Length: 257
Image (cartoon, rainbow, N blue to C red; front, side):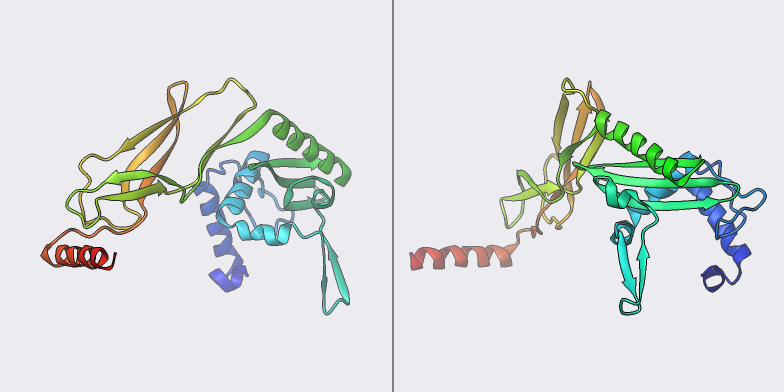
């Protein structure tokens, strides 16, 4: 694959190192693209978690494969079993990658999701494959026991109608552009405040998806998340032509009733 994409493994590895630095993986240096032991080929548990998060968040389709426990090939003549045993015996497990070499010993990047909270546990240099899974379970259990994902809003959910000036419609519905939330410690005393800000003097024309306001979510007065409020539909600017259409439409409606 490296040769197909870049012409040689050396050029591909250069791109791997470049991307690692872009992601903030400052403890990582790749010397090859296959991961087998080589002098200077190093990483850290923190860097592996960064790489894992990037993969899961930007390419979630990978979980269609990492969550498979067992599958068959060649019309059932061959079977493959996932080397990540957490997929079978840990609630909410979604992946992600096992690995072992004679020098690095037994390693694991384990991901799991429960009640909207997604966590990654990275274990490196475990003395046995059993120990890497036990350590990953303990890390994930700690995370799920002490933290929660607080959802603030859902993309596409309507918020309110806002008035529109000089438009063929007198108002337009606005909704959340994105889904937003935050991981936080389990604490019943946490109070999330919502500050809704609507743009002043909203005038047509308006395009669907155009930002017309925003919502700030605050904890103890500090903004922890922000989401845009966008128009749900186009609103044309009123003119003699569409004003005439609007009057005729009303006239026909009154005539029919």
